[in-house]
Structure formats: C-alpha cells, structure tokens
Amino acid sequence: MQWILQDFEDTRKLATALDRLDIPYSWHKVVPFVGDLMPEPDIQDTNAVVLFGSYTLWRYAKQKDLHPGVFRIAPFVHEAAWNPFMLNGADAVFLTLRDVPKKLTDGEMHWFVRPVEDSKEVPGTVKSAHEIIQLAKNVLALKETEIPKGSLRPDTELMLTKPARIEKEWRLWVVRAKVVTYSLYKEGSRVIYRHEIDDDALHFATQLVEANPQYSPAYVIDICRTENGLRMLETNCINAAGFYEADLVKLATAINAFAPD
Image (cartoon, rainbow, N blue to C red; front, side, top):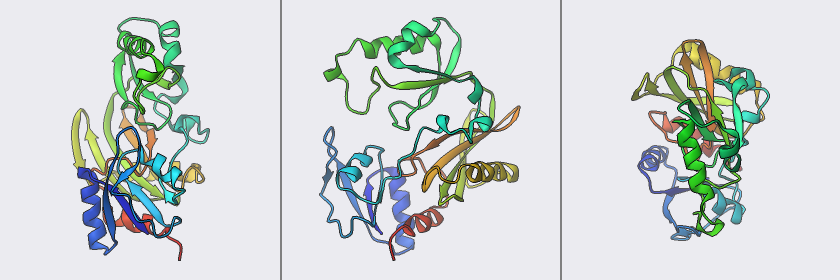
C-alpha cells in the first residue's frame, strides 16, 4: 500500500507506526482552495493508495481515482440500525442553515449542533438557540462567492439535539467490521487521552458495528457513557479523525491489508 500523508501532529504519530512496520510513506502539503498536493505524488498503483490528513483529501483521491484513497462515510444519523442507540437520536431536529432563522425558536435554550454530513465544516458543539440563529444569519448574509470552500453554506443540513451529561467518551477505529483499536478521550469535562476502554463500552461498540456491518470498510465511531447508560455519539472519516491514544501499529496494519495481493 502506498501511504500519502499530510503533515500534521497526528500523522507524525502515524508515520512512527509505519516506520515500525517498515511501510513506506511520503509527505505532502495540500494547495489551499485547489486541493492539489505538493509535491505531486508518484502513484505506483491507483488501487493501492491511502491518504491521511485533512478531510479535503477526499477530493484529490476522487480526482485521481485512488483506492481505497479516503474512506468516505454516509451520515450516521440516517442509519436506521443505529437509531435506537444514538444519544438523543429520537429527539433530533434537522434543519438546513437556511431554515434555522425561520424554524428555530430564538432564546437561551441550548442545543448540541453539528453538520449531518461528515464534512468537518464545524465541530460539534453546544450553542444557545440565539447563537445558532446568529451563525446562520451571518452565513446567509454572504454571497455564494464569498463563502470559502469547506465552510458552512445555506444548504448545509444541521442536526440539533438536547445536550446530555456525559461521564466518559471513547473513540474506536473500525476496519472491515472489526474494532481494531480504541482510546479514551474525555472524562467528564476533562480532555484525557488514554489507551483504555471499559469492558461494557467495548462490548457496546462491538454490538454497534455488528448491527451495521456494511456501513463502511473503515471508519471511526465515538461512544459515551451517560447517566442513562452507554450511547452512540457519531461516526467520523477514519482518514481525518484524531488518533488520541489509539494503537497505531494495529490500525496501520489493518489499513495496509487493503492493498491487493
């Protein structure tokens, strides 16, 4: 497998794992607004290339028809198999940014808000209804040509859910419908990275994966422990998700196995 890496702190950690496995890789920068790579990689086999770095690398992978390239994923909120396990999934409100000022009641009520698509336009966060409406108005005040590529747009669909008290949060890396590694990344309000997971949380995540085995060949799934039990938070693109304290040797080995014999 040919590994193409964009230079980030996390991909530096991945490179260390690739070195341990004696797997070659190359470093590249992404040309802003264009998406080309510098230097241009010398592709040996378009069916044996994987890219790690920013989410925008999917455009380069698509343009060059690289496989597996970037493992893009469908919006997790539309996956019926997972709906019963989602954090406030049954109570979620879906609005395009264009509809927010008309349909969201202004005030101090708080919502957890994130784009439905795994587009990295903005991270999921808690905002008051007033802040969300102001954000929407700011975007709607711009002309189409004034909105940078990869930013929120009028037709961006948002998911809004009621905030919940979360005790722990974990990220798990799934390859070919198997959990290959994991990491704790939050305990209460504290950001804490440790390569550990509670036994019942690992079992819960495994159940989620088994309930939807065709979701994607490789992806990241975040779960949490709340006062009401274990719940699913979201999925993310495995090529662009933070590694925290995952076992990157195990992850790199699993991804490298996608190379044709």
